[in-house]
Length: 338
Image (cartoon, rainbow, N blue to C red; front, side):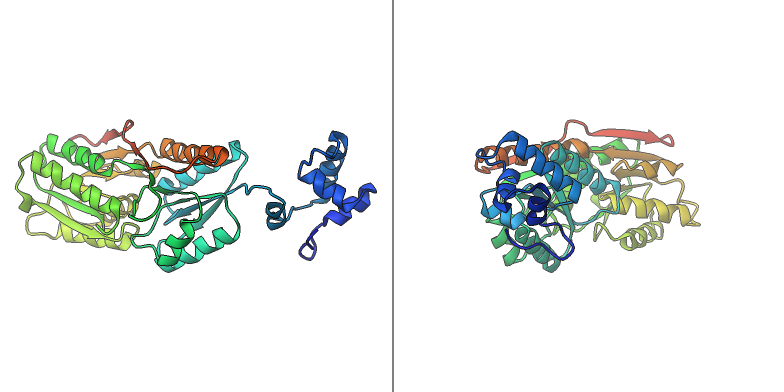
């Protein structure tokens, strides 16, 4: 048995506590059929009592499978990604796996974290990729079962689970237009991300379908998780020569930033502007103004993604091309009148 780190209980210590051979302990922990059920139970009880932690590389060398699944997220500061992590964790736990969460929204950090997950011998990876993953990231992921979540990048896994971002923003913008708004500003994420490009396309589609003058549909694009950009965009909207009567947001963090900046603004227009907000965060409930919240089935999406990957890991089936669009539960929460 490989030696353990200082302070960790070894298989030899378990063997000594039971008066059996070290090889017996190793075989019992590996569920070897040559070891009796009674001995396996005694070994596992002793291992639990002493706080034994199995050496993962050693177990895999004996033919054991990894029970770790990596989840790579760009951010976890809002309940959108937190809900994904929670749902995925429960999904993995129910199937006997453990979720390992990594936060990376920079190609260099993404590459390093991917390398560390591979070093830990994860069974699979669910990734919300950066816009341009490094060659190292692509090469490593090519050797591991992996699924793209929300964002979609060419050259990575052909398996993708996401939201119909275009339809979501088209529906949210149309809801404002139906309430009589004609001057509408869009504050959304950069189009270098697949999600940002699709959401902007949905906004433009709604404007075109309604026959609105595109000059009155202003666009403000920036980092989707940068609250400073969201606040700056809001100030530009309010200071425009012909301010809009409504704003559509294209990211959860930008929604928070816009609402916060509106609340802090001294402009008489701030409380009159209607909002079509991407996401339906619990914290948005404080806003007393006009709000249409675009709620996505995030938990369902994460569970579907996790279950799909785990089933492929369990059966050994190849990860053939698959795309899942979560659209069935798009809903709106209305407040503040028109």
